[in-house]
Image 1: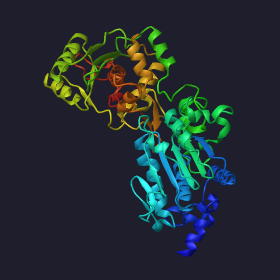
Image 2: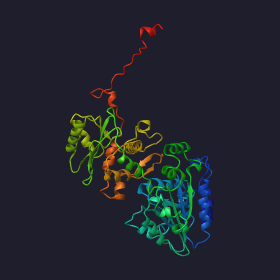
Image 3: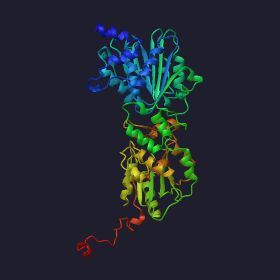
Length: 497
């Protein structure tokens, strides 16, 4: 025990030494692994160099592509900072509570279990603390979801004469006010102050972006940008698929692969220019194009239920229908009437929540419809939807991907400012399997306002839920026509040839 304590003390100002010796490299789950990636080593070295001058806060920011090991490095630094300097205090936060709990803190848990000194400390669901009950308030690092309305956790980062650690994971999406409060708190003299920011560079504005400028706030930050292709364990085949699907100079590849900030303001899924072009474009469709009806069902009083129509590349000619405050029976009747007027070839209804009642009532009226679950698995994609090479985390993201490809390929939509705002509103990211995941409706409404539900955009997206057969290939009842051909492989001529 004494030897272990002495070794931890020897690593107080040597984070690289700590990482090299704190984990069983080459054994068990670390078999075949010998230590940090070059970029991780460089950050650890910059951290070590900064510890020489205690009068200057250490500020390091890393913008990177996807899957380079950011959360792993965060875990190493948290364990080093905490275990090698008694009475260290710190806060770890992230862009969302889900990211913080399921990724950042979960990764810390993984490395804590591998840590050779784990028996000396306690890791809970929300904190890393001393086993000494008398010091658990003074020697701890907490995971704290950020809040613009409640910044006390960031304002209280004082620890005079000792060590303070602040880590922001996916810092690009953390509001400026949190950065500003933290800046004012990290002012103790003769104190090791360490402020680290990591993240995909998803926004071209904000304090994370400003850290990478050579003027203003950027003068006080040491920064690094990490290309996913330079890291040994990233999925190079998937990266190449992204480059082929989006283009090497696209914002998607810049952010998710190159670690470079986007030209657009946010990681928008559908660009404003594509939407504007679709609103100005003349609609085009043929008699053979199937007619799809998509219905997004309102879940809240301020939202609207929307019935959208799309025939081939034309989603404008047939007038969309909007309803507020009607029940599931009434909405089912509206859908039945719309089908009777237009003779639709496919009815796609958002069946989640109260939408299930609409599906049941439409079917009770004798109509066939698809019950589309936005959170269900992606099960179409590829050539039929024009988005080859893209992978989606759920059905909603897949439908939006098909809609985006359609907009770019010549789709025409109504000149509707509400629809425009809804189409360009959702941000997106990647899940832990590298699949595209749209921002949740609830998260988007918290960001933009409770009246900003994308009901009209989702209704149009529903028309892409599943491909419909061309009318030219069906009879009046919608059944496939038999294929007729003069060639008969069993004819007398063929049998005796």
